[in-house]
Length: 119
Image (cartoon, rainbow, N blue to C red):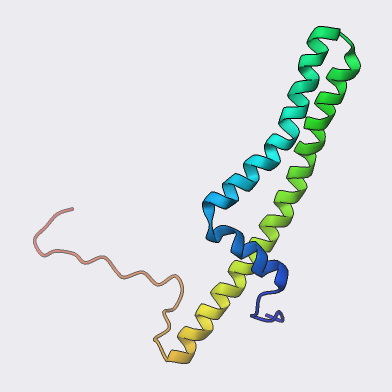
């Protein structure tokens, strides 16, 4: 692996978000409400005025946020993947340095057969 095992500032920030789940949820809720409330308000105005511009704008806000969240989720997943790869590499290196016995992959113990049993 050519990457440094140290986390970048972006990766450190991303990992620190998960240290306080309540704050993470609160921030996500505030972000979601920041576009759901105006969109719902525009829909309510459309119900009273019957002017389609309000409905179109309300749906446009929702569509924009949906597309944006897909791209943001992709970036977040990539960052999380890099953090986990570096963490696993650090654990593997630490185990190798401590001299632990390495287990060969895909080795499963043979099932034992009991004498006299028919199964």
